[in-house]
Length: 173
Image (cartoon, rainbow, N blue to C red; front, side, top):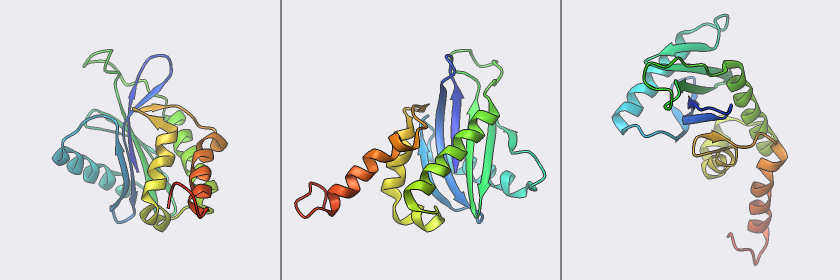
């Protein structure tokens, strides 16, 4: 997954996009919080996943690329990738002071939340339940800002939707 971030003051992380890819480089989930046209997205995504795939497990999970600081983590056959860039408010020449370990922790929390929701998350869960995965991500991140990392708070609305859909007279059929 590629998850672009822009650092904003008050220790909130602003995300440009989020993406999930498998080892073959196929996108399984993406969500953008900063506008990029489709050609730029496709080119940037493919270049970054190639960079991540070419790195060994002994190398660190942080890469500087085209003005972005890319933080990634591999879980089984899925890559969760976060990209950050310098604060928009600070100006064009500003340094990117984003906390890489904080973003790695965010990726880990996202994966743990997905595991709690789907049992043991796999590529097929993401492919066949894409709407719920987007909903889960949107519960954690709104307009590019990380809002909540509490697994129970994030999963409660999903559980309510699933319960209502199982009822015969439910709103969601």
